Length: 501
Image (cartoon, rainbow, N blue to C red; front, side, top):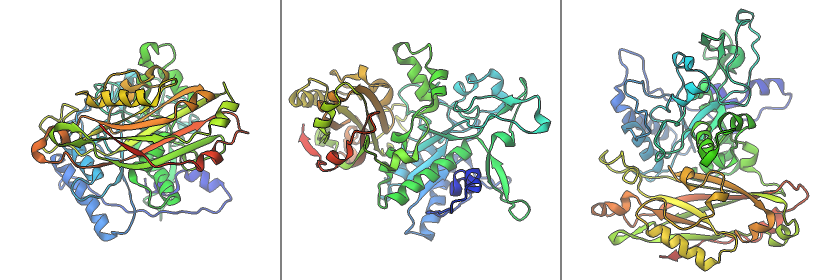
């Protein structure tokens, strides 16, 4: 894992003649000693916290990305998406509920067992749930996709790769069988290699795995790695590049940029959507198996003339005393209206991602109810075409007053690829819609508002006046490469306006 976290794609680095520049360093803490001194699984949450503290105390000034690729044994694992004591501890660690320090944390989704692969591909993935603590709301849970399909090993002539290039890796577990109220897991996919099969047996194969450094480097410098462990290490490398590019960036923003940059391959869409997208079920399957897709570092850190990312970091007070809603934020989107009108019916893509951290409710009472687990929940909505600003604010006001997380009122949800029923779970929400460029002139307001959470409900704890940070990313892109959206937009960025309810 260290070799992947350091080099990302070692094979590519070795084949390149360019100088390798590394902008980050590695630390490691081992938290799972082998028997007989193995740790009690019931204490994994506290042990994870201690492990992180060891690194932070040793070098308090380092800016970190946390990467963990271990999951609970089936004996202890919770498989329905319900928070566990381990995932709850990780949510506390990430949110900084105990020490006011926010953290970025990557966790592996866990692997499909070879014995379960006899159910067939991708059915084995669908019935293999993401393993604890991968259900942590604040963590980025990483699944795997397959890239390599060629087997050169002479001893495996009768074997072939299970998945095609660009498809979900046979190793990757999913949240397909979870209740829809729990977070989307995994959020992203990185390269986890492929599995070799002769039709009855399944096995690892070095030709279908990633090249990396060996822990016995004096004997042989290289080794291979596969499954969600390699994928998680790759994701942490991507985060390190973003943090190096933008020093001081919030962990919530790095998380948002990674998810916002992700997309599905055509192979993934074919596998999970084709022929079964009636009422959006295919899209839900795609989301619950492949997350938001494969992240793209270039899209995450760069704007170009015809693709612009607007990044907003804000802080909002969701609630007031006596269980009343407190604030919403209204952001004006500085679109280049003249340019959008000039290209008229040219297709354009509007994409929005909202990222924030929740604090898990004290104790585990009520954790099976998603309304009692998170401290607060945030949502985004965009002004519809032909909707006035006044009507838009009224619609958001109604949603905030509802006693659930869905709200009411038309939000143009049929235009969004995922829609609020799929995206509004967990603590990161991302969606996009394709419209004519000229229609984006009317979609010039986006609201960030709060819905129910235990900060409001458990008034005896007197946390109803706390604030929560959030990162909002809004991007527009067009296929027209000669259109300059960036220059006029960068001059119009405005501050959010707080609207009392």
